[in-house]
Image (cartoon, one colour):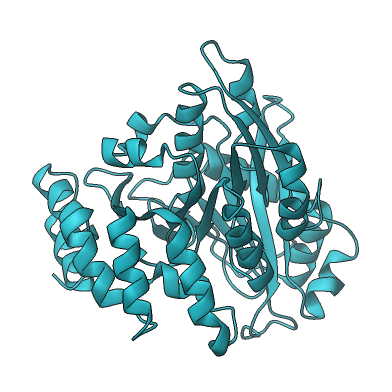
Amino acid sequence: MIHSPISLNEGFSPLEVGFKGLTFDDFMSIFVQLFDQGCSDIQISIGLPLLAKLDGKSIRIISRKIQKAEFSVLLKELKNDEAFGYVLSGNDLDWKYVYNEPKSERDYRYRVTCSKNQLMPGAEQGMTIVMRTIVSEVPDPESLAIPKEIINGFDRNSGLFVVSGPTGTGKSTTLASLIKDILFKKPIWIRTAESPVEYDLQAVNDMKGCKGTIQQLEIPGDLPSFPAFLRGCLRNAPNIILIGESRDQETISQTLATTLTGHYCLTTTHADSIVITPERMAEPFPIPDRPSVLSQFFENIEGLVSQKLLPKKGGGRVAIREWLFFNKEIRNECLDHLKVSGQFKELLTDITRKHGRLFIDDLEEVYKQGLVDDYVYTSNRIQLGG
């Protein structure tokens, strides 16, 4: 049993753990403490030390490497007996896990992924579990410092709204916050499909002053896939439809088709900037089909938002964002450009500079406010091409 308390201050040293093998209770004791101290991700890999991510920094939590036997025990308890063999055969797993801590009786929620990886030195099979902590309470836009331009621009009746960013940059949090805000403003009907459900937005239905109604479905618990959700969604006549992530050809096709029916569709995708988001959405398709996909995209896009999380001076993280909201003129300019090129980075950079906001501008703002130090400012300015 792990008895040593974990305090992730500057003087933290990895826990000295014997080779007897960590039990499931040992792992969960560590995970709960890391959750309570604000860690966003916990990484457990066969043949590597256990790592946790706090404010974007990866911290070694135990001194020795994780053994195959204890990893197998952990995966069995988190998922089932068949999970190890399933992943070993080349499949990935993605699910939600809720742990009820016995002493406090508090529920700790995690989004868990497990995948095969390259063999580590001394490891018989390479495999990694990543546990992302899920904080259930939906934050208000003000607490996330979401600008009024994004809050107001989000309030649309049809079309497509995309939030992009790398893994762990708060895309789902931003969308959940904007949805919560609009539920208090309008008598609307929202349906979501998420994998997994990270925020309990249905709890907003019962809050005083809520005007709208939301129903959340989980993939694969309630439905097998995002396309299956979209195919059945129109019969329920929602005003707003959230597709948790658009990353494969079928989901993107169904999402774009749904916008053509006059619905307002929200989704996320993995792209580092709004200026490459259109090309990233077209990437899963065969090259001959991409112009048609981009045409549908620009005919229906209403708003693009992207964000990054930077280390905050004094601890924590601060978001920088870029955004662009489309009108008829901007859409036509993009569609005209599509006739001569399928690459939009330079064009969208110029358009966003005129009509929206680029990352470099937001970086300058947080630096002037003293929210990031000189190193974070300089390194990110170079990365952003400033």
